Image (cartoon, rainbow, N blue to C red; front, side):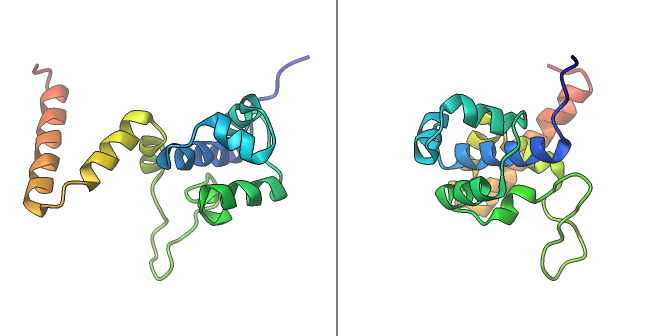
Length: 138
């Protein structure tokens, strides 16, 4: 018997659950405890291995403090547009970035910088580092 690959929507929803859980610094154990399931089941949800049912997704949304629609933002094949704008919501690379521990840490730290000029200088620095990396400089 061959193992079936996770559905792209299930993987996306799971990654958004993981991203939000990490944003609020909640462990898989704590989320599982609040849901009445094991952390291994939370892992399966986050990987998209197990599909999250509607009532469970509503429960997760409530625990994580987001609307259910949050989990579908940027989902493949069904672009949710931001209200009043013709563009889709967050591009996939933003979700992918925030789903990593480094991306989340960088984003949190950056948001603590209140001086707009300093924030601009940080962006300039990162862009210069990327340019140097792409040109092979060290």
